[in-house]
Length: 540
Image 1 (cartoon, rainbow, N blue to C red):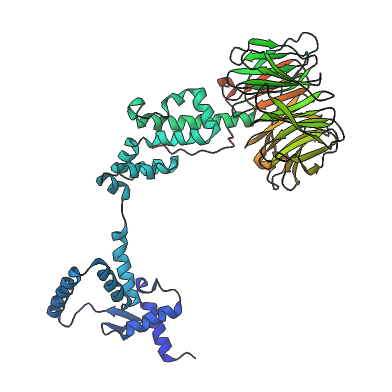
Image 2: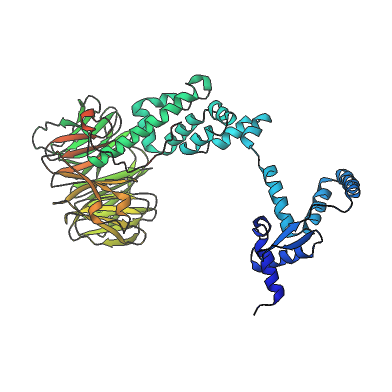
């Protein structure tokens, strides 16, 4: 049986106003606060007719006149003290108060501690700080900020914050950057003086149009809607386009008929034909200065990208040069002779052999590298990893059931395609196979990936688009990984490259196809959108 005093305390506690005990951490603290209340002379407990108790805090003071004089005197002394002394005094005073008094003080202080700093900063001549703070907001938050008050809206407008938001997206997202160039609104960005461009309202209305464009592009990828352009290569003797690379102005292709053809990307006209190889051109890469090609004639040739002149011929491999990559003064080539050659590339005319890597038991079909690793794949069903700096062997990735025809390596991820008709995703650091993609009916000949997609081409004539993020998620069902299958080539797909807006592929059918997912005819846009990337825009 509970003691009478405890029952009485509980009764009083139940009737205490919520504001008095809400801040208590536990029952013990609550009871302590209650005991404190009961001990105060200004608090008395009344018994109500229904048996419950009620706490009344008396607001009467025994000597109103004395209190006023004492208060005025305290304030007078308080005003004479330094700020640190004032703080120390108030802290001491608060420490002597009861819990419910702390609650009242907290309620009193809360509104005093709130500051509209965005409005206050311009009043101090610090508009630029207010603009800088709001410039970190995303589109949804920026829309909400405009609705706070007229001063916030003024700061956003005069600070050109919608323009800055778009510029930030263009700097950090290749899709935004590419879209700005293709749609032409890049001309309104990155102007030093506000008078050089349109007002903030222009950028505010531009933002939702950009989002609509992005959602349309994503939907076109998922639904396979595209505008198709075709280049007929019209090879002299044997037909087939083995390799290609493109930029905004041109496409450079290597053909089975031993030639290299350069095409205007807009008009699709052939600008130049480079001849010199005595075998099919199997691989190529170019930059702003040179084109480097590898051929079944076992040589590597270096060409001037502007004039087409042969600058250098490297004779090292004993059989066909199947693939090559170069970057930052380093070039790696691989061959049907089962070897990998690592070259120091000081200039187009100064290329010296650094090291030959041997270890594969069949033709080395493809290589890729970065500052850390060289990765090679072979007809012997293995992928081998080598140190870029020392050229020492690191590890072997095993899993494919037949020879490997293609791969791409970036960061920790390696994606490979094989004549076992599968695509595998690997973690290069631990050598684990992360996922196997199945769907092609013949050898997977070419593969590329970016942050969102894997695009593969195979000897079945099909190009498949896969969801990379889903493929990296072990919980994702295999049936959801292939987003779209594109069928237009009438022969084996040999090579492809893609970006946010297009795929460009080449085939044994002697054509180069441009699959444009940006400029799709309106007639093809009636399907339901299903964008894979989400952007939010709140209209005002």
